[in-house]
Length: 396
Image (tube, rainbow, N blue to C red; front, side):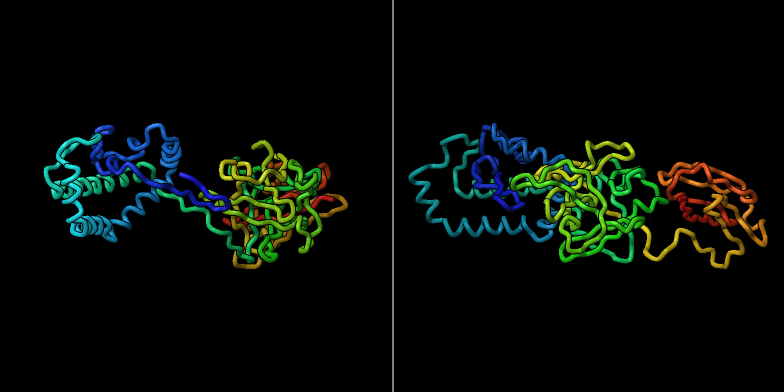
């Protein structure tokens, strides 16, 4: 097995040892119901590659599916017909060969000796028929044990009508912005009320610009160039959007399965990375190595998930006009509800910080004092009959 430079495919060959492959070698014995990964390699290191691939559910499912496709196209019948046709073509040659080198005595490591050439042909066809049935059952059983197949990650398709969230494969945390430093990019536990976790993705030629919904600023790679390469380990920041700025342009490279991507900066060619694989809130998002180990590093792999449709507000519509108001005085930092019919919204309201923590609960009939709150964006939630409503409150 080998790989060509700048070619993603693995190649196999040249093949040899057809005596083993077609069941007539006493070094391995009868292989009618055996896989070559178990008997056909000896000390060849290629076996380790194949055994490792056989642990991958996607690979096993692909083998089973491909084998079924070949069976449906008549591969067994085709091989049998080919053997018959070639035995006719070389009939005179095999007779002359038999005169010089008789096949009814052991010449090397044969298991079975034949008195005629036709016996050898019949033996080969019988083996292939048995082996095809074995492969069909073995591949199907392995695929069933592995479970359902995940398709390879497809090329990213942008839907401009939605915001997106970017989740790290290793931790499940979302790309977010540090509360204390609004331009520093981090990961944070998913919180649907945090608009700092929502991103507008804009196409820029073959690349994408990633703009934060809350701030309107674009994801920016600050990596410093050292010689001919850019230094890894710089925390990503947000900057004023400029579509011509290559540090704000990213390619989304599909990797493995499960809709995961490597996000690579156009200028630096570095990949977005969750520093150290930490699941702590506020963990730095860095520009990092972009190499052949991308598929092995969960810290570099990101799920890009469609979120809220653009143009929607955070308040859900109840299908009728609400006869009440939420009033907030930014000078006194007092918040209260007013309504012609308070029974319509009787109950409790909750206020959440941007990190998802509930910081206050109060009765809707009362006034909430927010003077002790730090500056920032908070989420106010309450129930209107059976409908949950939310709205943002900015403390300045």
